[in-house]
Image 1 (cartoon, rainbow, N blue to C red):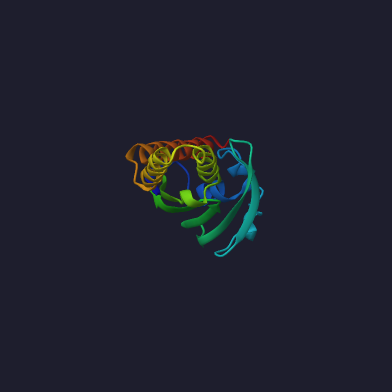
Image 2 (tube, rainbow, N blue to C red; image 1 turned 90 degrees about the vertical axis):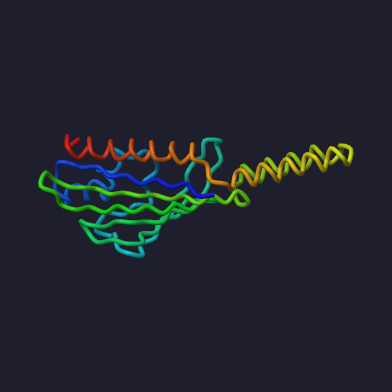
Length: 183
């Protein structure tokens, strides 16, 4: 299943300033939450740069997150691919000069593969263990329900797309506020 979001925001600062807030770790940490250890000094960025870190999930598990810059043309274009177990995210940020600063056009797309998501795999294993002792007609019914849940999880979900766009908009609003206040 794929979740997508696209948005744009005008920021009252030149593209080079906005770009620095998107790529310099000490500035990025002021508006982005999470582990930025995979981010080198911005002078180390280039198309093809790869980084890796370990992140803690909401369930307490740890997982490896990889990061690759797929396009890097300061101060106009920055895109990357971020991969973790069961999910790949592509993000692109295009910056253009306007009369009052910068127009930032951003898009993101996350592809979820439930067959490789640890939580979904654990749920399937637990369900299989629980139904193993059930009568055969119950086993078949529960397996069909699991298959249906997996098909639904793979289908597009407008509510989740809307939530993802809201989160994306909120993130870029934080960037705008940080840049404009010089936080």
